[in-house]
Image (cartoon, rainbow, N blue to C red; front, side):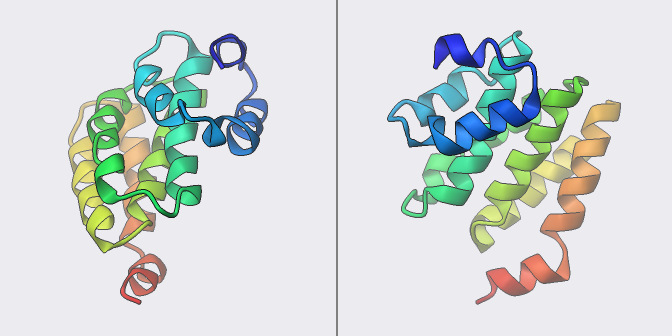
Length: 143
């Protein structure tokens, strides 16, 4: 995982490896946290892809497994690199679509991100809040 993640310079390869391999590894949760502030763009992207994918695929995970990701998402929302900001947005949206509780928390984090003085943060918050507050998402979470 260490060697491969450090070599991810193309988003689609990173995403596919995370979806088909890394998210199933016992270290997936740990690496998502560990790599979230890594200088290497590939490792940082991998961290947030893992967060997004774990939110989608780990159906048994309790909410408290995802809550530590929120401060990391907030912290890294100012990273202007395209490969990073897109997956920070993706992670926030996927976590926030798991259930009503995480949705409310993700919206609060999105609003904090929107208040930051960063072009990347504004982009992340605008897209995430639009989806997380959308009628379709809110309706699905109520059932």
